[in-house]
Amino acid sequence: MENKPSTDKDRLLVLDGYNGKILIFDTDGNPTGTLVDNCGGTPDGVCVDPVGRHVYWTNMGAHWDQKDGYIERVNYDGSGRQLIIQKGETTTAKQMQLDLKNRLIYWCDREGMRIMRANLDGSGITTLVISGEGPEDRLDEKRHCVGIAIDPEHGYIYWTQKGAPNSSTGRIFRAGIDLPEGQDPAKRKDIELLLKDLPEPIDLEIRHSTHELYWTDRGDPPKGNTLNRAAMNEWQTEILAGGFAEAIGLSIDRENDRIFVTDLGGGIYKTHLDGTANTKIYNGQRLKQGFTGIAYVRDGLGG
Image 1 (cartoon, rainbow, N blue to C red):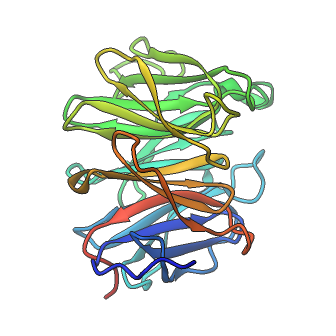
Image 2 (image 1 turned 180 degrees about the horizontal axis):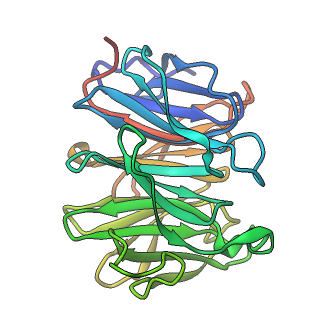
Image 3 (image 1 turned 180 degrees about the vertical axis):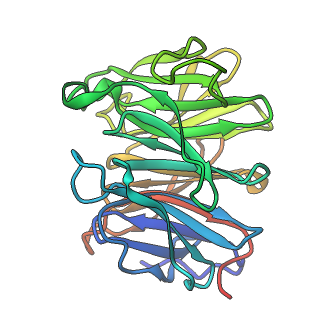
């Protein structure tokens, strides 16, 4: 049974990692179009710039042991597609965040084992954190940086290192948003381990008004395949919702008290920020869709 079309203009951008597309849905889960249908590689993270009316997305590339990941940008109407971060400048680009005030992109490089940032035009690439180097370290999934959240106001970056599948070695870290002067990104002294022994933490978002960190976990139940949160002063974890098919992306609509989650099983879910009323609003399993990143877009898309 299909959902009734939404009457609002807000939209969801969803990356179909299996088919290399950026799809558009209304907030009730009805497909309304395709923004990009030939991403190539494996698109993973997506963000929007409502001022510049741009959509940014990361791509893991085609070979996860090579530096062929990249980041692209397109206008809200699908025109003006640009390669912002070139192949060879990152390995497997994962979740990303935009700091619009300071005109910066932040992203995780999984097999590159790095936290990186650049200007919105792709210039000024900087490595902020290095969690490992070389082929041997790359095989250690505890070093893989996947999800990222930023708090420019308080000067922090947060990220996940997911660990091997269902190994309960996943962790969430925090460090200063800038590399301390004179320090090596591989030997930063300000890195804090906030949470450990997680099944497989993936993407992150911050609810700044309540100082809470939200994340998805794609590991096995009961702690995995979940949407989670923790107060950022106590770091006590709380499972808000479960039953996902390898949960990946999340996007918070702070004004309307809702959060959207995607999974590799082709599902899109909508829930309140306290985890109640969790509802699967779209099922793309029959179409062999597998969803990675998601972004909530206010006031629609188009020219």
